[in-house]
Image 1 (cartoon, rainbow, N blue to C red):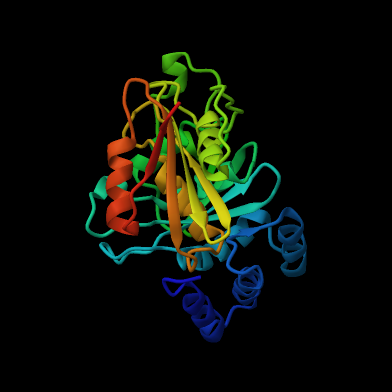
Image 2 (cartoon, rainbow, N blue to C red):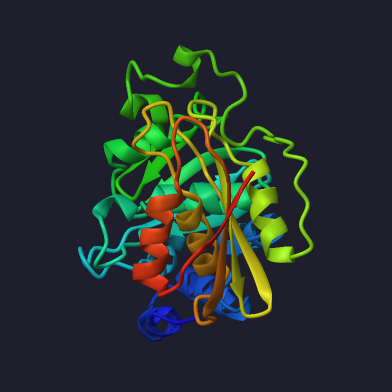
Length: 296
């Protein structure tokens, strides 16, 4: 881990007077910085401290906030998405200095994307240390569990998403029935001998783009590992989540941000728009790399 994530976790442990927080932080360090907690670990820890799942997730927020990358705002937001499986997926805001503010990853987006890439079929709860902004409320409205999603804050629990977003506009208004976290599998008939190129194409095949049909995926070569990210669209357009941010977020929350990215491949089937230009911009400014682009 870089960007001082490990130092932040060590500082939490050294300064903590909270046995629960200490155990959570130590568990994440034991996992090499992988910012998620399995269903079994959550259950055992909850039993040990007589905490409900939501109560335990609230205690996880300082650990999640350690993953924030906020060189512009210096304001760290942590989030925990609770999956249908019972697993916890951490998220944090990420900003990219020198680039447009639109490239920013919000903490709730971070946690949602983390769970989505990990294969979680649905979310039941979102736990966050600050009230979700309008951008994130709209983004979460795209989920297949939006109608029953519960939002929990340190000062307020058991709030429905739609209590924060009344009379919401979403996929149902546009006759979209298969929404975010529902299986998405688009066939391109594309095969490539380069594993990184194929990973980008496979990610595009699982992207969620019912409005523009601009399916795109990105694959990063991170040391010897491949990290892929998918595009996730929104009925309101602006909260849509780009594939490079998705991949960078997953790299960070997988504890791999100390490993450099040596290649970036983008695969895209252009629809009503293209993500090529904005992806090239962030890749160049943040990673100093040019993308390898493949049209599907």
